Length: 305
Picture 1 (cartoon, rainbow, N blue to C red):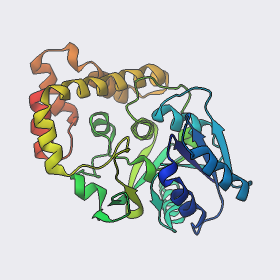
Picture 2: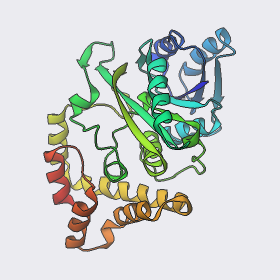
Picture 3: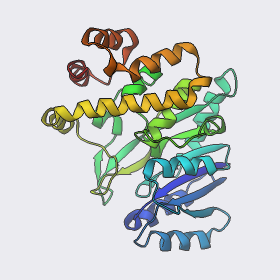
Protein backbone atom coordinates (compact mmCIF):
# COMPACT_ATOMS: atom_id res chain seq x y z
CA UNK A 1 0.00 0.00 0.00
CA UNK A 2 1.02 3.60 -0.66
CA UNK A 3 0.39 6.08 2.14
CA UNK A 4 -0.18 9.64 0.93
CA UNK A 5 0.59 12.25 3.58
CA UNK A 6 -1.14 15.56 2.87
CA UNK A 7 -0.33 18.50 5.14
CA UNK A 8 -3.14 21.05 5.21
CA UNK A 9 -3.44 24.54 6.63
CA UNK A 10 -6.15 26.92 5.42
CA UNK A 11 -6.12 25.22 2.03
CA UNK A 12 -9.80 25.33 1.17
CA UNK A 13 -9.29 27.19 -2.12
CA UNK A 14 -7.70 24.27 -3.95
CA UNK A 15 -8.19 21.23 -1.70
CA UNK A 16 -11.19 19.81 -3.53
CA UNK A 17 -9.31 19.65 -6.84
CA UNK A 18 -6.25 18.05 -5.25
CA UNK A 19 -8.17 15.26 -3.48
CA UNK A 20 -10.19 14.57 -6.61
CA UNK A 21 -6.99 14.11 -8.63
CA UNK A 22 -5.75 11.52 -6.12
CA UNK A 23 -9.03 9.63 -6.21
CA UNK A 24 -8.82 9.50 -10.02
CA UNK A 25 -5.37 7.89 -10.03
CA UNK A 26 -5.11 4.59 -11.86
CA UNK A 27 -3.32 2.94 -8.92
CA UNK A 28 -5.90 2.27 -6.23
CA UNK A 29 -4.06 0.67 -3.30
CA UNK A 30 -3.48 3.93 -1.46
CA UNK A 31 -4.56 5.62 1.74
CA UNK A 32 -4.70 9.39 2.13
CA UNK A 33 -3.80 10.77 5.56
CA UNK A 34 -4.85 14.42 5.81
CA UNK A 35 -2.82 16.13 8.55
CA UNK A 36 -4.37 19.45 9.46
CA UNK A 37 -2.32 22.03 11.35
CA UNK A 38 -5.11 24.15 12.78
CA UNK A 39 -7.03 25.43 9.76
CA UNK A 40 -9.60 28.15 10.37
CA UNK A 41 -11.20 28.16 6.92
CA UNK A 42 -13.29 25.41 5.26
CA UNK A 43 -10.38 22.98 4.93
CA UNK A 44 -11.67 20.49 7.51
CA UNK A 45 -15.22 20.75 6.18
CA UNK A 46 -14.03 19.82 2.69
CA UNK A 47 -11.71 17.09 3.97
CA UNK A 48 -14.46 15.59 6.12
CA UNK A 49 -16.88 15.48 3.19
CA UNK A 50 -14.34 13.49 1.16
CA UNK A 51 -13.57 11.25 4.14
CA UNK A 52 -17.26 10.42 4.47
CA UNK A 53 -17.39 9.47 0.78
CA UNK A 54 -14.27 7.28 1.05
CA UNK A 55 -14.05 6.16 4.70
CA UNK A 56 -11.67 3.30 3.93
CA UNK A 57 -9.35 5.45 1.82
CA UNK A 58 -9.14 8.78 3.64
CA UNK A 59 -8.45 9.63 7.28
CA UNK A 60 -7.94 12.95 9.04
CA UNK A 61 -5.64 13.91 11.90
CA UNK A 62 -5.93 17.35 13.48
CA UNK A 63 -2.86 18.55 15.36
CA UNK A 64 -3.51 19.70 18.92
CA UNK A 65 -1.23 22.67 18.29
CA UNK A 66 0.34 24.23 15.22
CA UNK A 67 3.60 22.40 14.46
CA UNK A 68 4.49 24.05 11.14
CA UNK A 69 4.58 22.59 7.67
CA UNK A 70 7.87 20.68 8.03
CA UNK A 71 6.97 18.69 11.13
CA UNK A 72 3.36 18.33 10.02
CA UNK A 73 4.64 16.35 7.04
CA UNK A 74 7.30 14.45 8.98
CA UNK A 75 4.99 13.47 11.83
CA UNK A 76 2.42 12.36 9.27
CA UNK A 77 5.05 10.19 7.59
CA UNK A 78 5.93 8.61 10.95
CA UNK A 79 2.28 7.62 11.45
CA UNK A 80 1.87 6.27 7.91
CA UNK A 81 1.28 2.52 7.61
CA UNK A 82 2.10 1.97 3.95
CA UNK A 83 5.13 0.25 2.46
CA UNK A 84 5.72 3.49 0.55
CA UNK A 85 4.99 7.08 1.49
CA UNK A 86 4.26 10.05 -0.74
CA UNK A 87 4.08 13.69 0.32
CA UNK A 88 1.18 15.70 -1.05
CA UNK A 89 0.55 19.43 -0.99
CA UNK A 90 -2.97 20.78 -0.56
CA UNK A 91 -3.08 22.86 -3.72
CA UNK A 92 -1.69 20.88 -6.67
CA UNK A 93 -3.19 18.47 -9.19
CA UNK A 94 -1.80 14.97 -9.68
CA UNK A 95 -1.71 13.28 -13.07
CA UNK A 96 -3.73 10.03 -13.23
CA UNK A 97 -0.60 7.84 -13.49
CA UNK A 98 1.44 9.65 -10.84
CA UNK A 99 1.25 6.98 -8.17
CA UNK A 100 1.58 4.01 -10.54
CA UNK A 101 4.54 5.38 -12.49
CA UNK A 102 6.43 6.59 -9.43
CA UNK A 103 5.88 3.29 -7.62
CA UNK A 104 7.11 1.30 -10.63
CA UNK A 105 10.29 3.37 -10.79
CA UNK A 106 10.76 3.06 -7.01
CA UNK A 107 10.46 -0.73 -7.06
CA UNK A 108 12.91 -0.97 -9.95
CA UNK A 109 15.48 0.98 -7.93
CA UNK A 110 14.84 -1.09 -4.81
CA UNK A 111 15.53 -4.26 -6.77
CA UNK A 112 18.87 -2.82 -7.90
CA UNK A 113 19.92 -2.17 -4.31
CA UNK A 114 22.07 -4.68 -2.47
CA UNK A 115 19.86 -4.62 0.61
CA UNK A 116 16.74 -2.98 1.99
CA UNK A 117 18.02 0.56 2.46
CA UNK A 118 16.25 3.91 2.47
CA UNK A 119 15.33 4.90 -1.06
CA UNK A 120 13.75 8.17 -2.16
CA UNK A 121 12.65 8.99 -5.69
CA UNK A 122 11.34 12.30 -6.98
CA UNK A 123 9.99 13.52 -10.30
CA UNK A 124 9.55 16.68 -12.29
CA UNK A 125 6.43 18.84 -12.28
CA UNK A 126 4.71 21.18 -14.70
CA UNK A 127 4.40 24.72 -13.37
CA UNK A 128 0.98 26.33 -13.56
CA UNK A 129 -0.63 29.43 -12.10
CA UNK A 130 -3.61 29.53 -9.75
CA UNK A 131 -6.04 28.60 -12.54
CA UNK A 132 -3.78 25.85 -13.99
CA UNK A 133 -2.47 27.90 -16.91
CA UNK A 134 1.00 26.78 -17.94
CA UNK A 135 4.00 28.70 -16.64
CA UNK A 136 6.67 26.14 -17.48
CA UNK A 137 6.93 22.56 -18.71
CA UNK A 138 9.58 21.61 -16.16
CA UNK A 139 10.22 22.81 -12.62
CA UNK A 140 13.90 21.96 -12.92
CA UNK A 141 14.41 23.61 -16.30
CA UNK A 142 12.57 26.71 -15.10
CA UNK A 143 14.77 26.97 -12.01
CA UNK A 144 17.95 25.69 -13.72
CA UNK A 145 18.50 23.02 -11.07
CA UNK A 146 20.82 20.10 -11.77
CA UNK A 147 19.07 16.83 -10.89
CA UNK A 148 22.30 14.84 -11.30
CA UNK A 149 23.81 16.52 -8.20
CA UNK A 150 21.88 14.56 -5.57
CA UNK A 151 24.62 12.99 -3.48
CA UNK A 152 25.14 13.93 0.17
CA UNK A 153 27.66 16.72 -0.48
CA UNK A 154 25.38 18.54 -2.91
CA UNK A 155 22.22 18.03 -0.87
CA UNK A 156 23.79 19.56 2.21
CA UNK A 157 23.99 22.92 0.44
CA UNK A 158 21.07 22.74 -2.01
CA UNK A 159 17.87 20.73 -2.02
CA UNK A 160 16.64 19.33 -5.34
CA UNK A 161 13.73 17.23 -4.12
CA UNK A 162 10.23 18.61 -4.71
CA UNK A 163 8.38 17.10 -1.76
CA UNK A 164 5.04 16.85 -3.54
CA UNK A 165 6.65 14.63 -6.20
CA UNK A 166 8.56 12.40 -3.78
CA UNK A 167 8.06 8.78 -2.77
CA UNK A 168 10.15 6.92 -0.20
CA UNK A 169 10.14 3.47 1.30
CA UNK A 170 9.49 2.04 4.75
CA UNK A 171 13.22 1.76 5.45
CA UNK A 172 13.49 5.54 5.24
CA UNK A 173 10.41 6.10 7.39
CA UNK A 174 11.98 4.05 10.15
CA UNK A 175 14.77 6.66 10.32
CA UNK A 176 12.29 9.40 11.28
CA UNK A 177 12.97 8.93 14.97
CA UNK A 178 13.15 12.53 16.21
CA UNK A 179 11.22 15.64 15.22
CA UNK A 180 13.95 18.02 13.99
CA UNK A 181 13.95 21.64 15.03
CA UNK A 182 16.47 22.90 12.46
CA UNK A 183 15.21 21.07 9.36
CA UNK A 184 14.70 23.63 6.62
CA UNK A 185 11.97 21.67 4.85
CA UNK A 186 10.47 18.19 5.14
CA UNK A 187 11.61 17.13 1.67
CA UNK A 188 15.15 18.34 2.31
CA UNK A 189 15.29 16.35 5.56
CA UNK A 190 14.17 13.04 4.03
CA UNK A 191 16.53 13.64 1.09
CA UNK A 192 19.44 13.89 3.54
CA UNK A 193 18.34 10.66 5.21
CA UNK A 194 18.18 8.85 1.88
CA UNK A 195 21.52 10.23 0.68
CA UNK A 196 23.21 9.24 3.96
CA UNK A 197 21.76 5.79 4.54
CA UNK A 198 20.61 4.74 1.09
CA UNK A 199 20.04 6.43 -2.25
CA UNK A 200 18.21 9.31 -3.91
CA UNK A 201 17.02 8.88 -7.51
CA UNK A 202 15.54 11.33 -9.97
CA UNK A 203 12.73 9.99 -12.17
CA UNK A 204 12.73 12.18 -15.28
CA UNK A 205 9.01 12.39 -15.77
CA UNK A 206 6.41 15.10 -15.15
CA UNK A 207 3.78 13.68 -12.80
CA UNK A 208 1.72 16.64 -11.65
CA UNK A 209 0.70 20.27 -11.98
CA UNK A 210 2.65 22.32 -9.42
CA UNK A 211 0.40 25.26 -8.71
CA UNK A 212 2.05 28.64 -8.07
CA UNK A 213 0.03 31.23 -6.19
CA UNK A 214 0.36 33.88 -3.52
CA UNK A 215 0.00 31.46 -0.59
CA UNK A 216 2.75 29.01 -1.56
CA UNK A 217 5.11 28.16 1.31
CA UNK A 218 7.75 27.22 -1.26
CA UNK A 219 7.38 27.60 -4.99
CA UNK A 220 9.20 28.08 -8.24
CA UNK A 221 10.97 31.25 -9.26
CA UNK A 222 12.23 32.28 -12.69
CA UNK A 223 16.02 31.94 -12.70
CA UNK A 224 16.65 35.57 -13.68
CA UNK A 225 14.34 36.71 -10.89
CA UNK A 226 16.08 34.31 -8.54
CA UNK A 227 19.53 35.74 -9.35
CA UNK A 228 18.35 39.35 -9.07
CA UNK A 229 16.66 38.61 -5.75
CA UNK A 230 19.86 37.05 -4.40
CA UNK A 231 21.93 40.05 -5.51
CA UNK A 232 19.52 42.47 -3.86
CA UNK A 233 19.53 40.47 -0.64
CA UNK A 234 23.09 39.20 -0.66
CA UNK A 235 23.62 39.72 3.11
CA UNK A 236 20.60 37.48 3.77
CA UNK A 237 22.33 34.63 1.94
CA UNK A 238 24.76 34.33 4.83
CA UNK A 239 21.81 33.57 7.08
CA UNK A 240 20.61 30.95 4.61
CA UNK A 241 24.03 29.31 4.64
CA UNK A 242 24.06 29.29 8.43
CA UNK A 243 20.58 27.72 8.40
CA UNK A 244 21.93 24.93 6.17
CA UNK A 245 24.83 24.40 8.58
CA UNK A 246 22.44 24.25 11.56
CA UNK A 247 20.38 21.66 9.73
CA UNK A 248 23.53 19.61 9.16
CA UNK A 249 24.52 19.89 12.82
CA UNK A 250 21.14 18.64 14.01
CA UNK A 251 21.20 15.83 11.47
CA UNK A 252 24.59 14.79 12.80
CA UNK A 253 23.41 14.96 16.41
CA UNK A 254 20.38 12.76 15.70
CA UNK A 255 22.05 10.15 13.50
CA UNK A 256 25.67 10.28 14.65
CA UNK A 257 25.68 6.73 15.99
CA UNK A 258 24.50 5.24 12.68
CA UNK A 259 26.57 7.20 10.19
CA UNK A 260 29.68 5.83 8.50
CA UNK A 261 32.86 7.70 9.36
CA UNK A 262 33.35 9.07 5.83
CA UNK A 263 29.84 10.53 5.79
CA UNK A 264 30.19 11.82 9.33
CA UNK A 265 33.23 13.80 8.23
CA UNK A 266 31.43 15.21 5.19
CA UNK A 267 28.53 16.40 7.34
CA UNK A 268 30.64 17.66 10.24
CA UNK A 269 33.00 19.65 8.03
CA UNK A 270 30.03 21.32 6.39
CA UNK A 271 28.24 21.95 9.67
CA UNK A 272 31.16 23.86 11.20
CA UNK A 273 32.22 25.93 8.20
CA UNK A 274 31.75 29.13 10.18
CA UNK A 275 34.25 28.00 12.79
CA UNK A 276 37.25 27.79 10.44
CA UNK A 277 39.19 30.46 8.57
CA UNK A 278 38.62 31.74 5.02
CA UNK A 279 41.25 29.48 3.44
CA UNK A 280 39.93 26.35 5.15
CA UNK A 281 36.36 27.14 4.09
CA UNK A 282 37.39 27.46 0.45
CA UNK A 283 39.47 24.28 0.73
CA UNK A 284 36.48 22.32 2.01
CA UNK A 285 34.30 23.70 -0.75
CA UNK A 286 36.62 22.21 -3.37
CA UNK A 287 37.65 19.11 -1.40
CA UNK A 288 34.13 17.85 -0.74
CA UNK A 289 32.23 19.55 -3.54
CA UNK A 290 29.57 21.40 -1.59
CA UNK A 291 28.39 23.01 -4.83
CA UNK A 292 25.04 24.30 -6.01
CA UNK A 293 23.56 24.14 -9.53
CA UNK A 294 25.27 26.24 -12.20
CA UNK A 295 28.13 28.71 -12.42
CA UNK A 296 26.20 31.78 -11.27
CA UNK A 297 24.98 30.17 -8.06
CA UNK A 298 28.45 28.80 -7.37
CA UNK A 299 30.19 32.14 -7.91
CA UNK A 300 27.83 33.57 -5.31
CA UNK A 301 28.52 30.63 -3.00
CA UNK A 302 32.28 31.03 -3.37
CA UNK A 303 32.04 34.72 -2.46
CA UNK A 304 29.72 33.92 0.43
CA UNK A 305 31.84 31.19 1.95
